[in-house]
Image 1 (cartoon, rainbow, N blue to C red):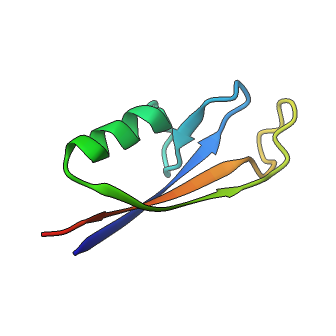
Image 2: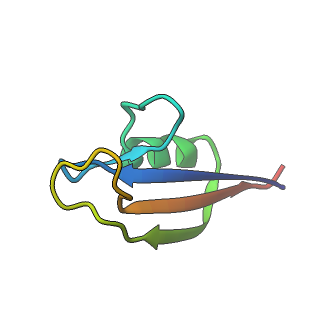
Length: 72
């Protein structure tokens, strides 16, 4: 069994994007859909609350962590 986890952060417009070293243009919905199409299934999901009011570039943001598993 393979396991992968991804964290998605909410930006100031309210959309969730995959958290990476370099900014990602892939939304959470599209990334999860592509993982499910590739045969992965959602194992767990956890949300974390942060201070996402207004434009604050270094403030902790709302985020969601999703873990996937794939039986091989």
